Length: 215
Image 1 (tube, helix red, strand yellow):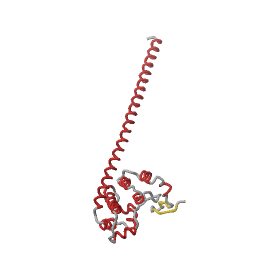
Image 2 (cartoon, rainbow, N blue to C red):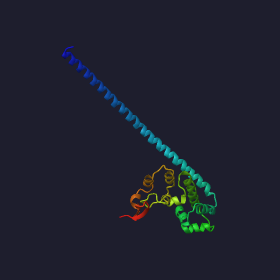
Image 3 (tube, helix red, strand yellow):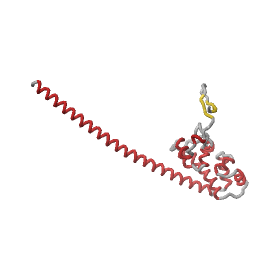
Image 4 (cartoon, rainbow, N blue to C red):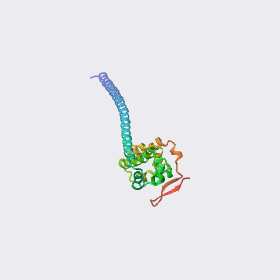
């Protein structure tokens, strides 16, 4: 083979290699684009499915809470008060606040005076909520959990959100389906500024924790 022929052959092989690499790159890019589109579509479907599941779960829980509330509404008032105060450990002022009534109203109920159907349902709903709360998550003592701060740096408590009419969101949070930030963003949008505590928890050199005022 002459030098010219050798050069021509080498050049031909290089052109073939370049063409192959070009085709491979194009095929690879095309495959990646197809996979990206496919997974993008799946992501959308998964998101929609997740929303459907969440909506279904919340609907079932709402029905459960309503059904339990209706069942407890048929109980005598003194029984509901005993359940909330003795069995659950709530104070009379806490019961009044969580049910949206005055302490004097609770005092009258304890004395056997009449109660409106709306107030009876509020007592029953609170009792049903506490039952569910203990069932769905690692809450421990529901009454104590209600009065704990949801965030170390802010003063808002679960009781605050219950009073504001968010029992479903609290149950979602207790079961681990809703993080603290998302819970507060949904139920109290201005929580980052309106409920910021002037105190913060710090860790001391010996490992203990202490409260200190924010600067």
